[in-house]
Structures are given as C-alpha cells and as structure tokens.
Length: 364
Image (cartoon, rainbow, N blue to C red):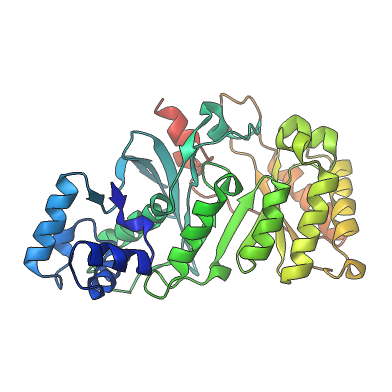
C-alpha cells in the first residue's frame, strides 16, 4: 500500500504518471493534502472520474492518504493544549500534542511507536519500541492538528487563517534512531508545495546518539538541536539514561559543541528536574561548569547554548517526583548567576497527562 503522505512532489508525479494521469495532478493533490484533506472527495478541482478512481484504489488497499484514527483527545482546561492518541493502520499508537502560544500554533510529534532508549523518567519507553514511523506518518500528525484547528474555528479547508508555525520532534521515540524518515519529514514540511515551513522553525530533541548527531550537523544544519542532558556527570546521567553508557558526556559534548560551531545555531539542553536526584545547587553549579567548558568564545561558539528546565511530570509507574517550584527557581538562578541562560518550560496541559507517553500508557 502506497501512503501518498510519504511521497515528495517528484515521487507523487511519478505515481500519477504510472497510473496514466498527467503529472500536474500531483500538485493539485498535494495542495489538498497539506490543507488537511482527509479523503479524495474533498479535492474539488480533481475530475470526478479521477476522484472516484482514487477512492476505489484506497478501498482496495492500494493507496492511502495516511489518515490517523483518534483513539483519545484531551484538551487542557485553559485551552492551551490538545493532546491526541492516534492509532496507526497496524494498530500501533502514538501521541501528538498541539500547543497554542501567543506567537502561533506548535505541534509536538512522535517519531516512533514506542522507544528503546530506556530513560528512567520517561513513560514513552515503558512499553518498548514497536517500530519506526514513516515520514508520512509523522506528517499525518501535523495535518491532523491542522485539520483540528480549522474544524474548531470553522475555517474552510482552503483558508490560511490558521496554520502550524512550529514543529518540535520531542514526542514518543528517539528521532535520531529513525534518522532517514525524520529527515524526509522535515523536507516534506519545508517544501514550497508542502507547508512551506522554515527548517529554522523545527526543533529535534535527542538523547545523544553521537554518530548520528554528526550526520545531522552535516545534513540538517538549519534544524534546531535540543539535547536531553538531565545530568552533568557520567555516573548520574547513566543512572537516568542508559544511552550514556554508549555515548558518555565526554563524547556527547564535543559533538554538540562542534555542531554549534559549524552551524552557528544555539543548542538547547533539556534538564528535567527530579526531586532529590538532579536538582541541588551543587548540581546546578556542575552543569554550569560543564557548559562553560564546551561553550565559550575560545571554542568559537560562545553564547550558543541555553538550558530549558523542565519540572518533571509525575508518572506513577516511574516512581519519581518533579522538583518543587522553589527548587526550580533556585536552580535557574544558580545557572544564570554563572552566566548560563536558563528558562523554565511553561507547564501546559498539566490536567491532561501531559508527560510524553502517559496517554498511550493509559490505554494499555
């Protein structure tokens, strides 16, 4: 079965030529797909005969528009966040989060069904890795959110009044463990006949697969990089993140430092504050010293780092608690006093199981 969402413009043109149609039908179809069309009947400028033919091919299981089935959807009481549990065609499930900010709509997408990284604080990894998502399955999450926004606001499908302005690849899965599909996903969204989304408005978060970070630096230099760090020494980080045994901090940090130097783009370090685990003043000082060592003017990347402090969402199965507000603020102040810019992630959707993997875990 061919998922039309997996295809770029050239591949979709080839598809139409192969079924005896003119290749310009690809452009018409892509325009509807990236407006959020869920079926061929909505593609009004395609001839009725062609729409019927495509619908029959879909019914026969030859092609699909890659639509996702909503198993659950929860909207935050303040309207800032909508969280979706989607079912894929094979029964696997993924989570996607739509976030509303003053500057526009942002979508957090999953790159895998499950995860094999084993980070102790993350609910996504508790069910293991089922499989990688295709590029089209990642695109489908964005389009489902776009359609939700249009339906919610009663905008016509052809309207550009509401759009998705930012993408974060921070949902279920490790993006660099599914590198080629994630790369194609960014290319599909960036295409002029896609969402025409700037690569600079896409952020990829990784736990630190060093060889792939180096490849990412060469092939995706405009995409923003975020590193899930969560500790400042190997002993503490390995206890939280098994990936650190394979790629310890003294291998990870030079690769990330080189990325910032080569691309000239700021790197975000994500730090989930966990009560009694990684939130002391000494640990804040150690983190600041680590970043000051690798991000300085002598290294050619001074100022190109930033810490995003994340109050850990509680997940009963994990048995870890997030740090209190007072401790979070003290940690932030210590970093800033030592010259490291740090922000506290805005808590959105706390009333809808906002931690990555919670909704999916609850359905098992």
